[in-house]
Length: 282
Ligand code: AMP
Image: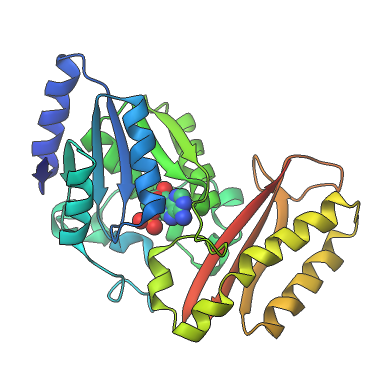
């Protein structure tokens, strides 16, 4: 397994693979790998002969006061897991090599605000510009035929899809379902911030999504009442809801109650940890 720290070196290797008619699948991550990430890597192997995983905690997508410094960095354990899966290469750059002149002097990619300033983009201004910019750059470096993203970050997936479509980037975006713990909690590197007590409450987020889905499927038409009830339930379970929303699954626009498919999205704080989760209603 090759480990690249410099963009130019991996870019050269990717060109060689492409000349040799190899296909490349790419899984971008921030590391601290869990089974959700590994499900993306396994999918990558079904698509291509070479699999590249990036591990980069991207400062450009973190706001002031967010957890950039605390974010778990476990490169050696990550490397061991990827080695076992026979990943071809890891891209493990530093912020200095990704943003040599500093973040303020770097070109950015702005996906339209109707998709990026709502939901997580409203609570985290600039977040999706940071995500789109780093993913655009990573795609230029790795030059993959496929890039695999998790539906866990549902809004992010739609932002990336729009960027790739609008900018005619020659890559297939493939998505994978949310990988969950046995009790329903969506796997996330941020779950390790939870205290034991908070960890016990955390699956309530996924349960709330299920409750909302059942209400929609049983014919409840007044979405705002459904949403308000869910927020009250979350507050009673010690969460501080950021948003609870029912949206069109394709574009996150507000739906009519007969529209399908829908996506229910929740972001909520449990203590100092912000958790997100979502559920599709076909
Ligand atoms: P992150 O390291 O959190 O930036 O995530 C890297 C990729 O893994 C993103 O495409 C995420 O959507 C995906 N991912 C994270 N958690 C999960 C999960 N529980 N199930 C499926 N994909 C996930």
